[in-house]
Image (cartoon, rainbow, N blue to C red; front, side, top):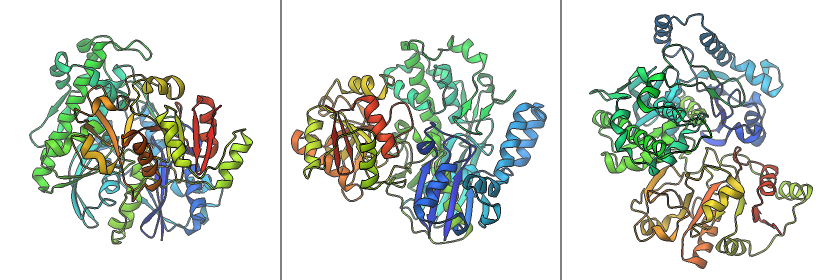
Length: 575
């Protein structure tokens, strides 16, 4: 049985294909159309999934989309009527978007260039946050777990909690529009001069440079935590609820208009414009925001614990990418185990929608345990070598490839590392990565100047052999998908300055020899030379989506003047 899960007409459009309850393919549209956070319909990813599986759309039994236009419909109508937005441009935009969701068979047929009659699959609409919850719990190792989904908004909800057992998920609590911890973070990010979709991660990286004391009490005025575990925004600071905020999801790059009100400027001063110099004030505000977000997450989790008393927690939603907050959950709550799948944001709703159909609607037993993110396309040796030949890259196929690469790394070279299936989710986890020596204090500047061309305050991540985590970090709970931040041990911080952030932390990836054998081996070869079981790992890209194909990789290698490209078993060295 084949089930397609789709996230469409929202940021990070994506497709997931299940075959008999296992993930056959999963990929974001951006990796193929090369538009960051691509919205609209994931036509290329859909074609890629079917091609990888070697099937036509007529073989698909069910199609699930992570949108339900009917969800919370009465609340939506009451809110629109109250605000007087019935005939507004924004309401018309949302109705048009919802109409596309309802005509999914036609959209699928159009994307594939086939007659709509060949799309014989049954269509399922899965509410946004129920898709998020399914995406984390149903692929976890846990037979039962408390579940939290928290993001900006989806289907008129920003937060939902639940309890999962077996194939059942029970919704416990939810927070509806216009209140949202995710939108609060977006609002302050916009005020700080980071207006683009996905810029929230930059603010998380900026926060450790700040001292929150001058702004924390004022920041706490933006959100009120209620005794029942919910929360409410102080809407004086926002404008998304009053006249509506335009959000463009139809195609290309998603755009969200300004959501902060003049009250924010009145309380915190003039907003920073994009590109203006960052001042200490901006770091201090980011630090205060991060604390308030963490307080909000812990507040919701406190209520969830009281309702479930279950020591296992699964987490999803865009706020699930706040790895700093994630890294504090097990220390600051009664929960003992945590699972966050690699595409925790909206791309992951395609995963959740598919598994919701598989298990909740069809009642099929759970058999998938998502322990890898390597679920995208892969390429043959011939595809890799023909691409390098065509683009003028000279390469060899050395028998001692890993030893040579480890020596290049120890010598301070920057390596483009391309192998196997592409990652699902935004983190490079050793298949589409740029690798470098974490011991070099100048490596961050080198990477930013030559390759990444991004803000200097943003940290680079350490990939560490899982056997050595206890030697290097204060926490040891596994972090295979680079979604937890821990402090380095005091005696280790000076040894790896390129991956130790200003607050002595690292957003680590724990690398398993069983699950990631080749990536484990290259880190181990580096350890044999240097004594350090860690590599600096960042995504293989230059201000664009992470590379997917050999052509993407070669073009990035050539344009950024990386020192070395490893593509499968082939090695290319820049002269």
